[in-house]
Image (cartoon, rainbow, N blue to C red; front, side):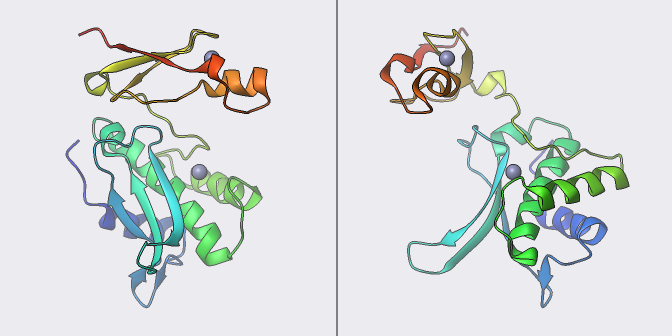
Length: 180
Ligand SMILES: [Zn+2]
Ligand SMILES: [Zn+2]
């Protein structure tokens, strides 16, 4: 899939599933962009805050490396997921992550159509071609591909299990070059 322009998809989803509520004065309430090649921890995210120069920031960022190789359903489902976050935040004005409002809207959208399915989590595998490193947890032996070597990264589930969610040196991931 070549990099698809996001705005037409946004308008379509906004019309079909958000009663046009994500537009104000004809302009999207949230900016959209593709990430650079490094966003691989998630397929997309929504955030609101401030730019360093003080301007308001409200955007949806979609992962180019994860979504580009996948069928369009993955893009639609990720974009729609992030649009639900934007809707809960900007339209309902409610602070929640995957709370009851998010889940109700997700269930409604999934019930209305079968072209894609929104889920609570959207991690897609890092394409093998993009992975140059394998990070292995010394405790649980779980390994996952990474595009670049990262310092100080610990296994989340082991930190959770053995250290009450605190980062601990014994769960430090060990990076090895991925086999070519
Ligand atoms: Zn989410
Ligand atoms: Zn582990």
